[in-house]
Image (cartoon, rainbow, N blue to C red; front, side):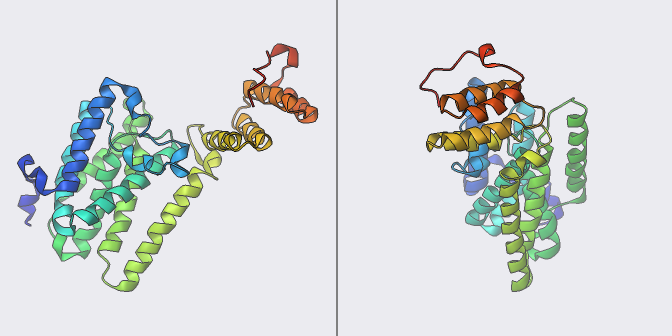
Length: 305
């Protein structure tokens, strides 16, 4: 492929020839339309604490809903442009794996640092990072990424950070960075010139995902920059309640109540429940943390754990 042909991605009539690229785009359009009509429709697809425990698909499905027409159009244009190049040279099965891995890494990065995001931009930056590495390491990708495109996407990456920090536009910048980083790492896996290089890059990829899991669970309270590190504690508390371990659940709720600025209302809620299960000493400690007394809080229904 010549540099000139890179500037002209296939016509959309060729969409059936690229089932993974085209499928991701079509699903994004359909899910986004449903999301715009009913915002709650995205709830089962978005990333939350359960994504790192019982519902890992959320790390991928969160790429489908988009927040606005510019968001959707910009992302789909670049996914089509980069995805068709990759699918043509690597095959549909390999590209499907790349989509899953870049989507998961980008979604996890945004959740860990901020509040989580929606959209396929992490995947498009994953494709971008992948092509940046492959154009220099794999002859099949010579000329597939021109300098003007690199300048544009690098420039948008930094402009988006400015727009987000200044409050002009909310942008999932951690997703962009996470997707790009994973794409670049996968580029070293795909474009490895020796088996040892491929093994090393593969081990690095696994290590990154293990690190993301620990950051999203064990380390979330210390890492999250939006003050949402208590999400994992709430998840663990609810899981303990479902398992019938009320004491463990209340201990997780105490940790959540003590996260950041003390949540006095939650401490009072915990105090009432310590009393309900006959642990007055723990209740007294919780009442002290709440700054309230039992007569200031109406008791919950007796069947509540």
